[in-house]
Length: 93
Image 1 (cartoon, helix red, strand yellow):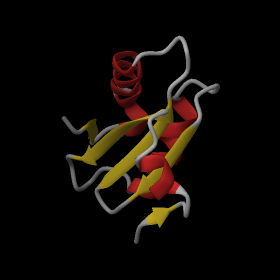
Image 2 (tube, helix red, strand yellow; image 1 turned 30 degrees about the vertical axis):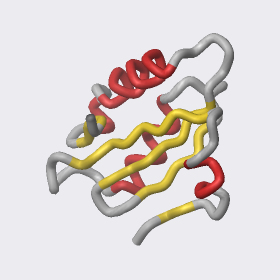
Image 3 (cartoon, one colour; image 1 turned 90 degrees about the horizontal axis):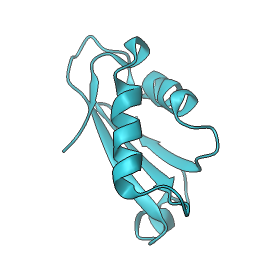
Image 4 (cartoon, one colour; image 1 turned 180 degrees about the vertical axis):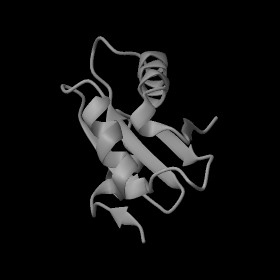
C-alpha cells in the first residue's frame, strides 16, 4: 500500500522543495505508515512537508525557506532518524 497525496506530483518537480528519501533497513522496524507519522512529528514544526509512504520507503518533500539550506534539511532529517522511535530507518543516499 502506498499513501500518496494527489498533489505530490506537482511538488516533486517544484523548485521550492527538497526531496528526502528514507528507507527501512531492518524488516522488523515499524511500517512506513507508522514511521512517517513519527518522522513528521519530530521534524521542526514550522517546516511544510509533503510525505509519500511506500512499503519500505518514505519520500518527503520539504519546503525550502529563506534561512534553511538543503544541507540543513538533510542534516536535520538524519538527526531525527537517530531517535529510538525511528530505529531501522535511514536516509537513502
